Amino acid sequence: MALAHHICIRLANNSLLAPTPAARRVLARAILARAGAVELLAFSLADNHLHLLAACPRVAAGELARRVELSLCRSLAPGAPFSRAFVKPVEDGWHLYQCFRYVHRQPERHGIAVDPLREASNLPDLLGLRPLGAATAATVRRHLPRIHRPELLALLGVPSLEPVDGALEHVVEAALAASAVPALTGRPHEVLSARRAALAVIGRRCSPRQAALLLGVGERALFRLKQLPADARLVQAIRRQLHLIAQRAAAPQGFVADAAVGGDRSA
Image (cartoon, rainbow, N blue to C red; front, side, top):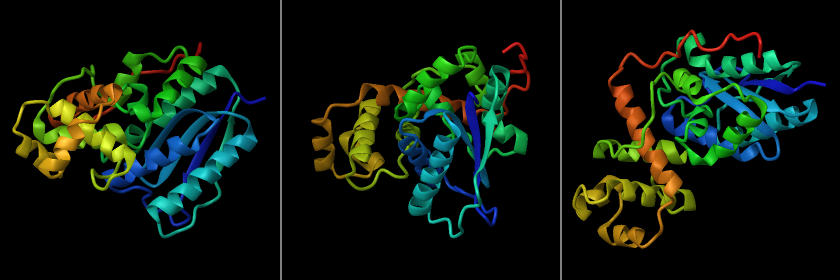
């Protein structure tokens, strides 16, 4: 019996699945919401195709692919149908480790640097950058105990991630990435939560009027936001995202995963 299944999804015309940061956040939220009881280990988008790794039977892997495709059709309206999903069994422990690394090395493998914060993957969830998919971190610890934080940081392309206050002009970007919401507009619960956490990160570093402008709300709405409790995990995630953004700005050529990571055939 297979330990897991590697799934690959693409559109029939091979067009880009999620070409903008907003679309990549929608994609990540759709995958994490549709995983359900399936033990999702990894996912990563490589421009025109999506890789997923799930510790589940073949039937459940096929159902996961179907649910993700339906959700992406509704939320992204890609303009083309999906090809039949590729589903391959992962037969042993070594293969499972190698497949996990393969999924997360897609940007390096294809020479892609369009998603520097790796929002269209679950690396943010594994590194405390996005609470939404925190369950995947527990799943990885259970099935892949030799995957440790230094390796995940190397896959992301940074030496460390610390919660920092960061530049005010990047707080909204960090909040969007940490919350996996396309924009801070409207009043859905996840948007209100992102705004409140962003406000906690802003703190007293600027005037209420400036804070309201940053968050795209009026001063009355800002006052109401202050009355809501801030999600502590989301606040920390935004601060880590700010550290990631600062490191990304210092490396404009894009992140490159450490080629020395992995390859332990004893796994």
